[in-house]
Image 1 (cartoon, rainbow, N blue to C red):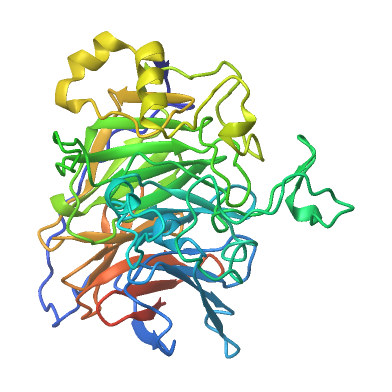
Image 2: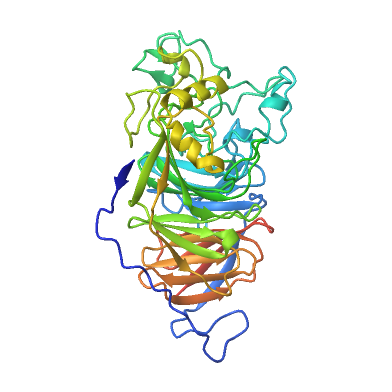
Amino acid sequence: MHQISMKQTRFVQVLIVSIFLVFGMAIGLQQLSAQPKMTLSRIPLEDKLYEPAGMAFRPNQSNQLWVVNHGNDSIATLTNLGESNLEVSVKSDAYAEHFLAKPTGIAFGYDDTFAVSNDSINELRGMNFIKNPERNKNFVNNHFMGPTLFSASTYALAGQTKKYLEDWPQPGNGHDPDRDLTLSQGCPLTYWNSSVQQCYWPREGSHLDMLHESPLAMGIAHDKGNAYFLLDGCGSRDSNKQCLGNGHLMRYDFNRDHQEGNGFHGDGIVWRYPEIDFKRDKDIPSGMLVLDDWLYFSNTGMGKVERIATTEGNVQTIVKSWSDQYDKEQVGTGIISWEDVKSVSMDGDEPEAISNWVRTHGDLAKIAELGQAWIPPMEVLAEYSYVYNVPQETFISENWLDKPSGLASDGKSLFVADYSSGWIAAFDLKTAKLEWRYQSKLNSISGLAFNPNKSHELYISDRDTNSLYQLKWN
């Protein structure tokens, strides 16, 4: 067990201030002394959204908003948002059935990469294995699911011109040309791996990496490097490996990626926070964001917004790395396939490899002590740990806040949306004091995004109407 501590003295616990309604409350709008004038308008998108969920503005790109579509496993990109020359494109990865499956959240991270959370148990909706029918039983609905890492510049490019074969290409096979193809023989420079002097064409779509410890994930937030926090709605498993629903917070560090479409995950680091409870509410996305060493998240099923200190807690490693060559918090490209690791004889997602790794590198006494709280890993990793004694606070709890969903911030205020009631509110980040509250009259708010290029502008995704709205105030 090792200790992580705050980089600076932790803030004194926030006192949740009770806000009393003043007289003269207008229908749909709570009259506060600082209540600004609000304007809500719908963005005309011509059926580009399909059950829209989480959203994020792409860094260093003027007014470019990315919206994940939970309903059809795609991402809508809106460029020049708020301008007369708005451009909208919708793209699906060639293997979105697994790598972008019922997405709920999106967060941009290191060097124009982004990660998504997937509200899926690996249904592979729409897929039917013909050449390998056993995979309909062993792979479909097997809960082999988690967050996926992409590059914004290459998302949905790899494999887009490839038609599905008679069957979905199996993991590890894909549609690669011969690896012995050299640069002079036609290997594109983009896919040339100089470290091993081989050509690695995209196999399974455009994803850069994926880890598989959290089906039914409802939100995601970037921490640093290639590390992300995630809300796991699955929790413990029963004897049939089905989710029990006692969800909790998780942290994923992809470490070095495996390039587009490959499959090495052995440098991934996964932390579970079993004391930070999270309750999933059906398929309602739960907003998350990291600000000043605090992680804020909508605990949708519990009707409140909470926060934790991201750099505090005791990390207890349950299963150590299978290898001594992996450090934490690395970025860039590393090993791209298990077959390139000479010291192992099987892929890290094979059941025998996983059980051998746990048996030889795991803390077996701690695993026995955990009992049902022990959630066996789904693949061989560089570290699999549980984190305890993390400071946790309820930041917002209001009688009108029933199912908090979207979260956003401008650095001074925390914006919160309630999924079903339509309320959108702003709270002071230092005091948790209610600053304003607005009734949007929307019945399925699934995401919020603050425009970093404007001072008072929020974007709101509404699931049931497949719509995007702009909220401005002064």
